[in-house]
Length: 138
Length: 247
Length: 114
Image (cartoon, rainbow over all chains, first blue to last red; front, side, top):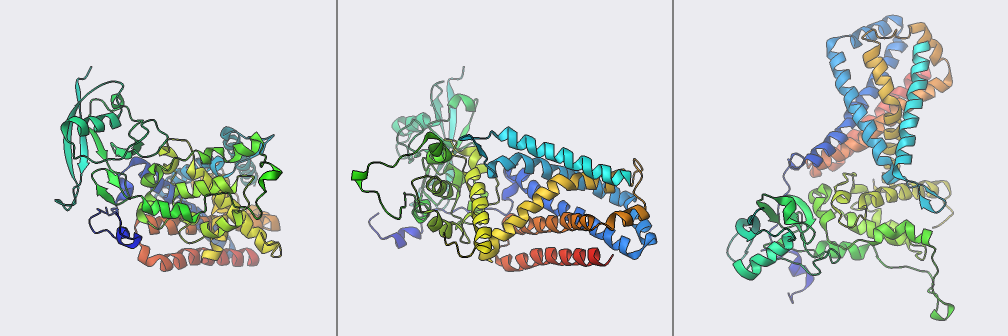
């Protein structure tokens, strides 16, 4: 090819393949990736539930009782179960990927991945225990 | 023990077809053969018109990257015995324009590689009389994995973001930028930061992680990108809090 | 937009960490355990008592606002990449971050006035 770079850039006979809008269904790892990204929707859902709870609290004990009653309906129980699974998926993938982003060096060597992952899960356990204690003791 | 295995290979001859097609060849099965040996057998004995790139046939040059059964692989490292009973589908790498058969055009990557300045940048070069730059094994360890990149482009072919957004600078380019950023002899981190913080730089990456999965040299470009996001974000916060410290 | 991308990514990361560490237990209790009667939900009075402490209000702000920003950043890229809505990139960004800002503002207002 003795022609200049601009010509070769737009060479008409090279075949350029278009990426389908269903690209994320074509490979299993891509599908899991999109599911992982969609966990953010359920994360936002949990935040909204708490926002709703705050609003109910602001309106008084009747509104709060109504809020609790609404959460007992089958619709919300199903939605909350699905959301819980997605939020768990978020937590597990998040903790497993942390060592890629956070590299800790100790005594000249890189701290092994399982230490970082393990500390994440340990922190998760501790945080959950503290929250549960506060909410269950009343 | 199989006697032959079928290779279904993409053919694209722009002088006579508008879109790529497939052609199947039956090649002898040898348990020590890799897909590249199969392709060479086809070219030598069955169909001399098949075009593909290869060079070292031992996994260090990065020339023979192709999709084997849908996964970007070095064909010199893909043993036919792993794909029994076949057929084995061999296609050109995704997301690059196909020039002919299994050959793709890589100039997009070459341009991006140059943009990240993959060389040691120093404010002042040490004159040779002063001796060499010294580096401890620990300092080498911080960037060594990123230096193993052989520019085989399997990571670009695996990255859906590169497919959806061709302007994305891509995993290998960022990993190579990191290789120099983390080199103790280099002083060009600020220069590279400007380039990598652009719209089509590191922030396009959504950590799919496919690049690291397919990398044959264990470079871990996904890790390089996430680490760089953290460094870049930290620098950004520092520049807000301490605006007078020009880095 | 480019200049605040590091900030948006930091909000996404801290939001993701908060969501991963704290939201599972909160959703389990509030969404499943309490409604199903496995444990007694805290009474209105005990919640009000808890919320009298400013630290609790700050905690609630953190577990609502940061996950919203985590969603905004991640969902924006999911729409942009997943549905290839490149031509709507500015609109998507405004809607996502705007919603997060709105949610944060409402939360802050409620936590200030209750």
